[in-house]
Length: 275
Image (cartoon, rainbow, N blue to C red; front, side):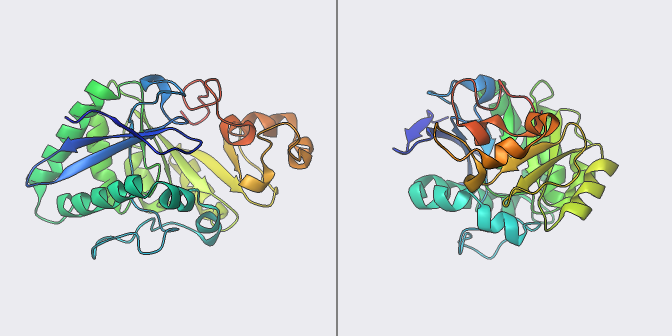
């Protein structure tokens, strides 16, 4: 295994590691200050995520593989943070494209052996290096039901690890929900809210709502609200108009890291809203 590589002189600290698989293929695991959970600290995160290209980034695939983010919406593509990541961290984003190439081969019909062995190798690496919590897709999303089945295979092979995922691939949610150690968060916005809510509630998943204009639908307790950049109050002096319009219950749903800024206390791990 290669040592985690620290990179990117930008606000968030990023890291990555390579997992050699077979036939010249590798997976690249990434991480950052926000999502490190118990695997590291805000200042020194450890890799704990498997990511893919995003639909918001032009020409994300260097091959003729699966379409990225098949459940994406105009709202999420316009607001997607991965556009900035791809611009400011191109070396990291290329790892996501490399993961897509490897995954397309692994998920191809008739590759049952590679399907299982890749899941086993990833699960073993996670147990040894990211047992404090593992996230699916800082960038990208579930590509198909077959992909969802592979994800649940990895989770099942690392039963002591807490996994979490955000997905707009609604057809994959029933399969993902079968994994006992995977917290399934269905991502919604104004474009897909009705369908996303129905799928989430039918499968016992959590609903996570992205608001870009400050408006909010009626959300069940336990939902999570992600405010777009223009609504956030991340430093003194920021416009708190939107925050001041929220009820007490709505404020409890808002992602504190997105709204108030990242820190050792404001990151995934100390906050467990999505788990």
